[in-house]
Image (cartoon, rainbow, N blue to C red; front, side, top):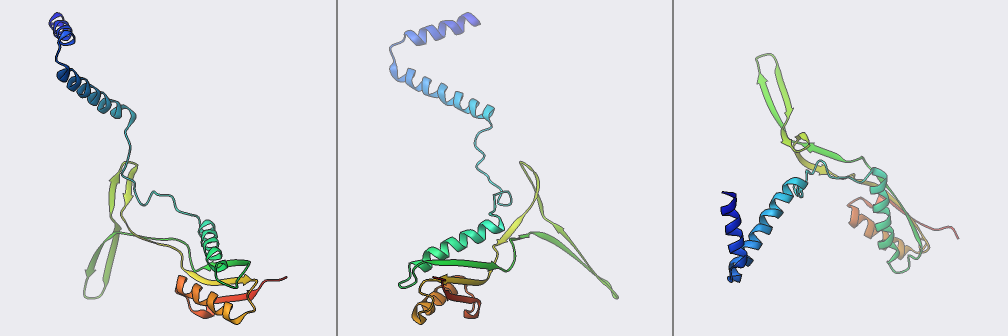
Length: 176
């Protein structure tokens, strides 16, 4: 049996048909790559949204402040500016639940259970939505803060960006 396999391999190597040799080599490389990916674990392209990294509260606030500062400072007449943002709450995640209601004559009982699925890392609840913290108020101190037109443009921009009322935005002149 071993000698017949050796004979076939040597006859294949000595043959003049280049197309068959190329196809066989490509096939052998493909099989080798498939086997190799099994040993290395391959790429795990399925990422669980509940497992993805979230920005911390402070990092999220800092990112919002930096972006807002860049936008506000590009408004004509604003000049140098500093921004502070306060947030209403932290991240909020909403998970899927199964609810069971029991209604008797004199009482109502409700039982809620999270919907769980089996992931690679273990059992995980099913995430429906994630809410980012809402902006409560914004304080801006800038060089052009004493100019009423500049102040109005800044307040208009901030209220449009964060969908907050004008009384939650403060614009002042920066200390010289």
